Length: 103
Image (cartoon, rainbow, N blue to C red; front, side, top):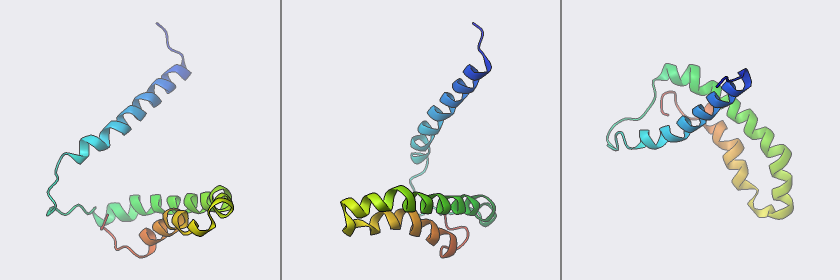
């Protein structure tokens, strides 16, 4: 059976998706000791996690402004704070308030 280039890409993407969905459940049972410090190294936090946090903040703000805010304001105006907190404030808190190495 001969696979084309597109088929290989689709197969690799499917394998990556399956592995990414299975990995968190396997990792959660590794060590459930609450006394163990689960923080990340500060350099990993600074160079990997914080740039990802910037991306999450930009994407969350864009998602909040364009599709989420108008729909929530029309349907449930009193609940506007819930998506705002999750999409805008949480990444902002992570970037500007939380200390390095605490995630």
